[in-house]
Length: 210
Ligand code: GLN
Image (tube, rainbow, N blue to C red):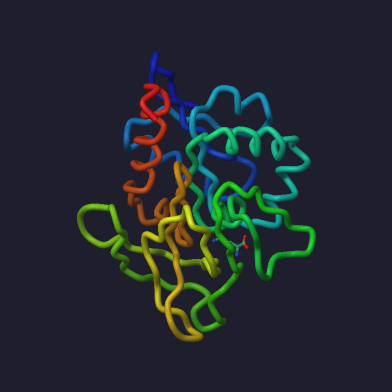
């Protein structure tokens, strides 16, 4: 946990499993105040949340056993800004393809996500991506058993796509209102620009200007 400065948004990092520390380091690099979210009471102290990469089936079970699923769902429905990377994207989706039958996503962004969508050859790969609305050089995407977005609802902006092994392209960065998701791991390449979007969303909510 880093010290809280009055009036500054606190960014939670869901800390049940996955690459929590990597996200904390990126957020600390932006000067953000962070707090690990492990139980429902932790949510009361945060203004925004990061759902990290990891294993979405495990994360889903831990959401249930920690009691976090319902209160997290409520905060997201009430408009709390969120960033989900890889497994975090899977957790935030409306619908899953190739999920486990008992895997229920949180439905915070109107997208249909296919888990482990890249064939064996490309289970892990890296690609440079032009992300709409993100300034500067392309983002370096590290994809590890990554999901893709198969369908998006009317309120969702597709910010980046990659070419798909089966042909065509698929969305890998999407945003709806204050929820941003990506298939890859900006926290592993140390790219802070999507975290910057989250902080900007949180600052607007805290200032009452959004
Ligand atoms: N394939 C994993 C899942 O389904 C996600 C992998 C990741 O987060 N790197 O949860």
